[in-house]
View 1 (cartoon, rainbow, N blue to C red):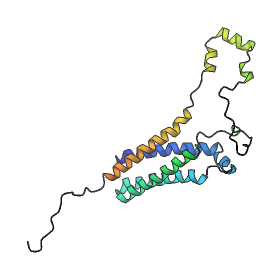
View 2: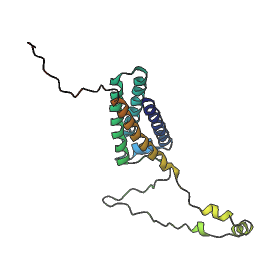
View 3: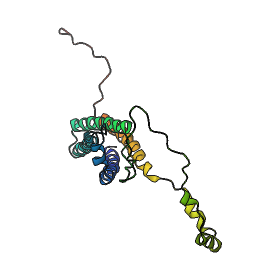
View 4: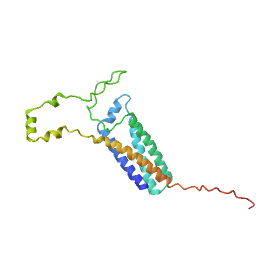
Amino acid sequence: MRLATFLTWLLTASLGAYMLRTWIARGGLRRERSRPGGLPPQLIFGHAGLAVTGLALWGFFLASGARALAWTAIICIMVAAGLGLSTVTLWTPYPARREGEYPDEPRSAGRPPPPPDPFPVDETEFQVTDEMIAQLLDDPAAGRHETRARLDLAILIPVAHGILAIATFVLAVTAASATLRVLSLAPTRPRCRYC
């Protein structure tokens, strides 16, 4: 169980590192610093740092068997999970958008922005050209592939990260609890000095 905990923790940290790298590469850090009331970078880096520290402590626990290291790693994962939940609650930084995908218009004070149009119409998208007609007459199946909606699989990465984090915590607590000595619940008789 100790090794399973280490492996799930390692996989969780790998997904987290991928999300962090993507967020930084797409300008998430710069965008949050420039935005008033943006997500503090200390929150994200604190979450990542505590998770990696807990992983290292768990690795040392595997090598040495010291129970104190296991429980310290569990404390690290508890605080890291709290920071991770705070990140999700305040603002989900992944998948980070590329530059230019955010509207540049400032919000009007006191009023929420209007909801996005659920069915936006792009006039150029619906123009039929002679080339399109000729292509459809040659290969009718070619037009269907272009209009098929694509599932955005990027959302599965943070979901898998969260599920693995929960599994890691449960495995870590179970493995660390197995190291505790079972206390005897049988009543002890007081020793008689004269018996």
